[in-house]
Image (cartoon, rainbow, N blue to C red; front, side):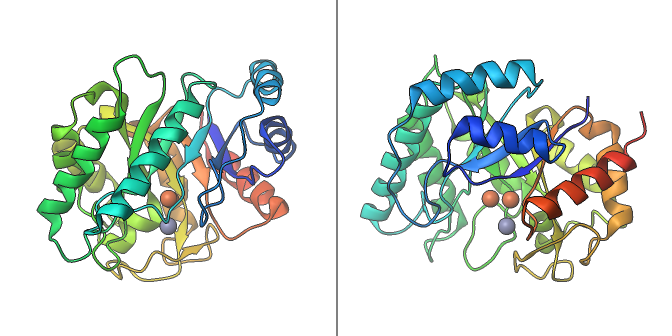
Length: 277
Ligand code: FE
Ligand code: FE
Ligand code: ZN
């Protein structure tokens, strides 16, 4: 089964997102758990969640991906910034228990001058404070572009975080094609080699989701500016290989391209057309 979807606005609730996904030809979606820039989360509407879960079962939506606000910084040098990240992530994970068996993705953060090692230590420490044995959500670290002091643009850094987390089986990785390309991994000319490196350093069994984005910038630019599929430096051909790669088979793919619903529908249809059964 090819699992494909896009980022959707969560403003109107889960059932609305489920219907929107189906409307654009998707069978999954990503959403922000709260305003990506702000901190406030609406109270979870349990009835909406109940109706959505029923809808998802009937419409064969096998999984959804929640994305933490990207302004959180779990490895800031400021203690109150880290504490805010901890509280927000913890609150999100508690809410995710209403949708058991799904995915929750977050950006590892920026070490703000303390150095990568200290950043890794702080991220792992925070995860060890909030993860619990019985939780039903898999928490994903996203591969980053390496903008500023971002942690997680090298596979080795993500591996070091995973190695330090006690609830290791609750963790995984979300690979963002724009981010890894901007970080310097050549998924255009050497997709096999990049995935082999991922396997060697982290292990492909830890890869749980893919963000499909083209990039506005060249390889190793460390910029993180997403482009529409086929309109950027990664290009259509590379995406055709990505959605057909045996190592990625069965993973959920999420578009975070600069599009409205109609644009996402077009990209989903194009990507479905690429998939060889
Ligand atoms: Fe992200
Ligand atoms: Fe992403
Ligand atoms: Zn990005």
